[in-house]
Image (cartoon, rainbow, N blue to C red; front, side, top):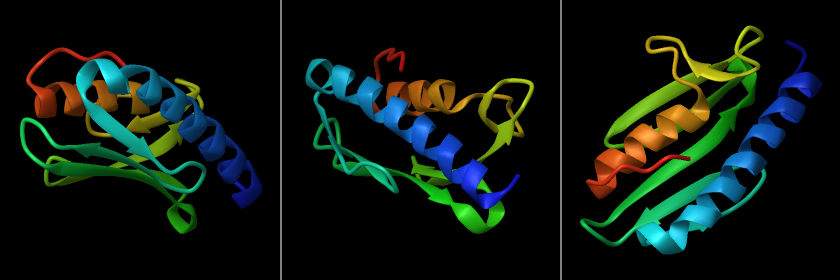
Length: 109
């Protein structure tokens, strides 16, 4: 994938994720900071933590740092989304899973 195409798809994916996270943040008690190149999800409860979602342009991936793990998602034409290769989860599905784990309650992004 060309860099300009990656940047466009990445920007769209991160903006959609930011909007979805903002709509969930008050209900679930976390903050969302940043836009464009990097998003951070900040938690004070049940324990202080930060999730970081950012593009890695040279390898054409979105990287998510959450729960002491680095998740690397690549674009899938079939899914029409950034996908975690080892599980097949889309970015939204992955974020739903890690948010649910962090908060101890089901969250759907």
